[in-house]
Length: 462
Image (cartoon, rainbow, N blue to C red; front, side):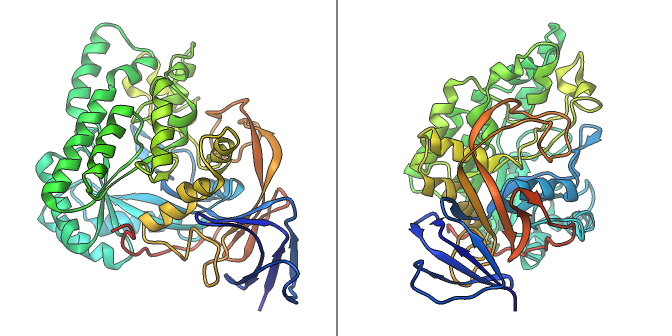
């Protein structure tokens, strides 16, 4: 039995900050104790004095090897989970896609084939429902039994992923009976397509127009609509990548009414803005994602929503496309720029910077990045906390280290950084995944295939 002892660090969970030693045997945490109060011995000793000892991050929204817009996201499960490990994230939940005309199981099997034997850290799956019909509704029950307990639908992307209100209602009704969680991409895609057509006809073709046509009011309208559909269905709803203060206001109102309504935002909406979309010489294409970046004044509302728990989770929506060869498919037509940004490596660091900047507390950092996503997606307490019996997914974090984010030093398989040149305080030093070192002293020591598929339980907020 391999034993690891992490000593002298400040253990931070969503509920506590305590100077504790952590004892790991094989893949599990077996005990915590006050330094000097025990006589533990171990095969490996990790000195964490002056450091934080935190749970491995749980990123509940990634898209590895995802086909979109005539291309595919540039991170594979191997490169993407390795980058996640570098950034202190030890579990991802990716999105399997039901093929049009195919079954949910067919989509899940395809994503298992992509991930199996290739991941550096643990992973689970959500299911994107491309066809809502009697067959796929029945298959939702089967997937829940296989540990895929959340299902994503879209009010956006007509002709690709779009579901109408009747289809959304039926899926929500099914989730209301089988315990599944419906996740919604909430933008009015029908109206957006009209605005895109009109913008292009006026000659408005640069990346900044992507943000202008995907209006905040259309995010708010769709958010309101899916909340009310969920209320009719008697089922919970989780709204992904909330970017607009008007959409957040809809979530806040529903939660004030006591409805089981949840939301996530992403680092790009907290740290970037339409100023980036407007960068000259097509550089703005790097920041094209949907929902889009908003004007800076929306950021204060999102931070407030995180502090008040009207937003529970920060995920990345990691869906990278290279600037050269992928994003440039949209030169002369912003609607052809692949939608998505890289971020899986930097989420934990950026949120620590938010602690430094006074936006959130240390425990809230761990809540929104580790514990809440684990609870939301049926992984807690195996993931998302540090306690006896949990998986030994542990990060030793140096809160004083400084770094500059750059494409020249990141490990994601993409040729630009959305945060190029940004100086931040805090850095991952050592990462354990189920007790096995993945990053050690700032060096990657993991391997493809260590990461295991994790079947998930039902949402633990219900």
